[in-house]
Image (cartoon, rainbow, N blue to C red; front, side):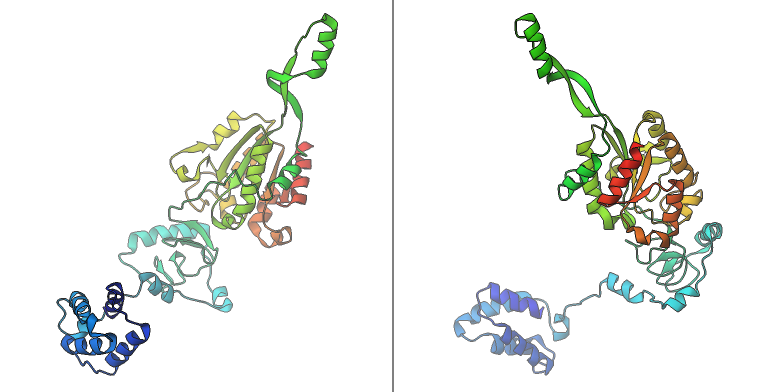
Length: 391
């Protein structure tokens, strides 16, 4: 209310300065007004009004601000501490030695124990090591630490240790109109070219027109189909999670590929391809495309290009139910093999620096499933990937 008094007096054209306002607060702190609002009125008027012409305006503003207030204690605003601040204060910060002492349950025991906790737990828990809660070392919940856990009720990654996320997450489509750096990417993609004349005959064939005109003695215009890059491309884009760090580079590649190839289709997936993919991230929960439909719809002469950092829990690749977001009946590696067998000319482009690949188990797994056809998402890496797709 004190701050409101200051701002409302300024709005009413009473020339109150910040120094005068601070002097008023010092008077309150020194208990010059003691406890009653009437006493505070005289203190405030003495500190804030320098000219009697402004007394009437001061009285009107004071009456409005302190309407119904009898004691000075009631004038203090009740400032609540934001819940988010309290949650952050409760987070447990562990040393590397303490983290090393926490054991992972393993995939099957992790899910089996989660079922038991859901059946047994009756209330909220915080700071523990067993129940579904917050700020502890339990494998279930939010804002804590566990080497392998199920993240529940947390808005983003903290330790990159969750093997499942029990929340609905929203991703954004990549922008296919990005131009920054796109020119260099398009030049690299042009290694993947095989021109053919397709479509309706609507381009002037100058040489044939001259030949036929000379032969017949009158103008004989000849048309031919336009020349296009006949290479067909399927682009599978990993989106969300750790790929958020690489959005700009992925968008540039997406934009370059869409501009370069006439026969081009794109699909999104998260971390590892499973039984469904999608075209729009905002509708990925209700408008999905079965991966089997992709396998049946597009012939084997399409080139398949995966774009992703391949950084995930190893369970997401190797285990049924391993997907971080849903229960997949078949392991991710099963779908990877189906896709690469259907489209033998396939590569994986990884935006993570190549010298770091060996430190991540899932990257090694995906590189193995790709038969070594994983390339860094750099101009040199893209050049190598295009060569591999032309062989």
